[in-house]
Length: 518
Image (cartoon, rainbow, N blue to C red; front, side):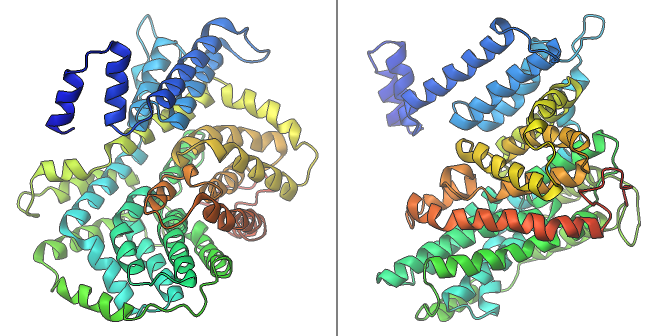
């Protein structure tokens, strides 16, 4: 906050309400919306924890977890509190409500903070540090311009495909779709600035921004275990329920078909915004000039590539890989990677520079989300919820069940911004529904929760879309016009392509007794 802003608040002669409203306004928040969300979250928590009778079949602990879940959901939906602070508050409320049993008068600290001790969290932290270093070195811009230059991007279609390639590469280096969207935004804006202002060119700008910053960043993350935080939530859930962990290589193998979803979205977006035949005059020449202006790679950039290559080999050669060189979990490899990253003198910047570019809020959100999924399972809340929901699809075939649950997921996502928070709530319930429906719990969870990634109806459903919307290139109507068809394609793709693909690799959703192949 600027000194002038602080002085304005300090000189405020109103009451406490005016003081708080001034602070929220200066932070770019709506005081009314923020406080409505904050009050609603605590009111719902109080009603569930202290006022409402215990539903039949739900334990007292499960009711407390439900109260915490509803509180966190409302906080995440309204963003009344920062999402990371909501994440770290989940263990606190689980302790205060005794949602998990205490041991001889001592709170179960190990259980309530289990989400912050899983190997998925440490793998995530390594990815965040890697992303920070990549940005400090300017390698993100170099990667983007190099790919666009190499494919001689000039037409709208080539640029979009080039930016998809950029996103796939960055998914290995930068976790979280919102971080990738923010990273490539300057490059995307630079490219769209080369277009004119005719009606067709304005439509082309919409297609480039939506595809490059939203669809490409989300789809590329599905393929890379560390490229999308919900991936880590699901693998952690599977491991805690007795299934062998999906390694880095096996995750890629199971999810490589999702890369073809981008071809489908590109076909529709090109048709929707009529971009075929639209070219960018001087586009490739401008991109080449910018690429050459970066000069040769520095020693620090080469060092970063060497570090990531080493850690990448360790990721790819763990348990379940064709070539097994070690048996350490991915989180342990991530911690080793962190030690290597911070060898003294390896990179020319101070710790504070890395610290300022690390997405600590998402790190706390992930830990809290994993804790919530674990608490939902242990308290019986996930099973109780699954018992009530499975009646909606009871008696349906496996593909009909998938279709109904996928559509239901999209409806639930209309009011929620965080994909991580949504999967944290959905995954344990869907996993518990698997045996009740006679379906494989792992395959069912992957199919339903992965479709959540394609919540493309409103920009407010995905943080990457909020960032893209901030460019002012497209309207909410433009976004919905393209998005609703993409959602239907994603549902059909999940049923017709991904379900058989999982079965090919030993995960038939229709057979709950299928042995785990890894």
